[in-house]
Image (cartoon, rainbow, N blue to C red; front, side, top):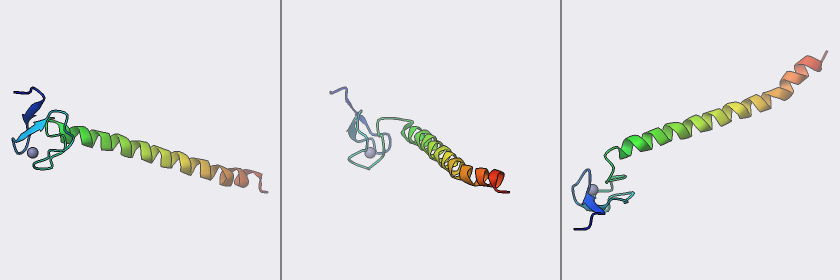
Length: 73
Ligand SMILES: [Zn+2]
């Protein structure tokens, strides 16, 4: 018995413990009980990063308008 082969979390068929996707049922990270939670946490981090980039971009784009409103009399 190869110790790197474990049953899939969903379909219980043999998969590698390093498999990203189960070849039998298509489950993501079949070896990891918390696979979906990890993916969700990663998505939240990614969305947070994208949102903060957008906010910074909006702030940078707003600076010329702000300066115009100060110096235009
Ligand atoms: Zn499976």
